[in-house]
Length: 354
Image (cartoon, rainbow, N blue to C red; front, side, top):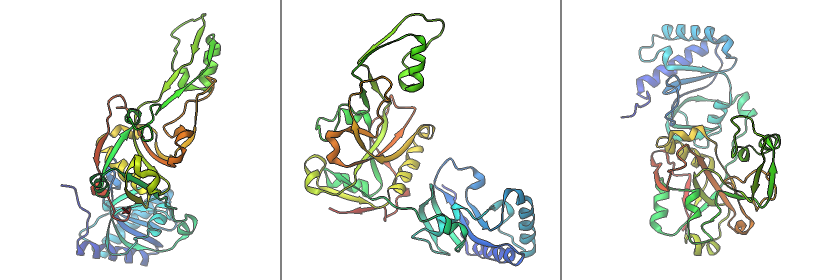
């Protein structure tokens, strides 16, 4: 069973007593909150702690603040919390992120909150007030998207946090040419070029991916000749959306059942954390979410870098696609599957439209 946060009434009362004692001793506290990170790889010293945000705190002053904290705990006669349970930080972007939460509420347990690249499965705010950081860091702007499904069942799965993750190779074998793309993750070159060793090493600097094709283990005085190569980027987990809603346009190829994503960053973080629990290698490789760039074409020079998973031919531009991509060291064996992210799902992320 997962360890729960300290949230008993007596412990909350002790936290409030400590905050009051620290402020009486001269601390300027703008934030105090118990946090439990959703990520499994968070260091133990950060997990399930009372975070106190104090104006003026710095690592140079850390020992003085820790001594003052220990003295306040003794003076207040606290029994249930110790210095080990507390992290001190300065007025930073973390505090600003909590301050700007739409669901912010003091003295209430909040679940599955997201801000500034941080996903908390539990958050209990004891104090959170305006500060220099809350003016410096603006509230994040949310991106909205739409996703279509061929059946009510698929849509209901998604709404409940069961996410069907596809793969680049999987899209390449879909027979419906409007859904799939046989050249997904593939870059074609139409050129014939030859190189001596120095010429190839120079090309490798301009296009490292292409340079990986040939390695020199010793002297080489021959010629490398390449004609019309095809580059396949590694397979990756993929999830696709549309930036616009158009029921008539998408009904035939993608389905008539639609949902609206109200917070793309939070959804991406939610899926990433859930996927990490199954495939931890994803943190070693690039991942991200972007609008698809419809400039993919056959290249005519080996100097030109291959296209990424976020590129498609112009013929697909009508889809106005937005894409999530996670790379993995298991690229040679991954297959589409249903990922359970229900524990981290917040109702406000996804809206049922039809």
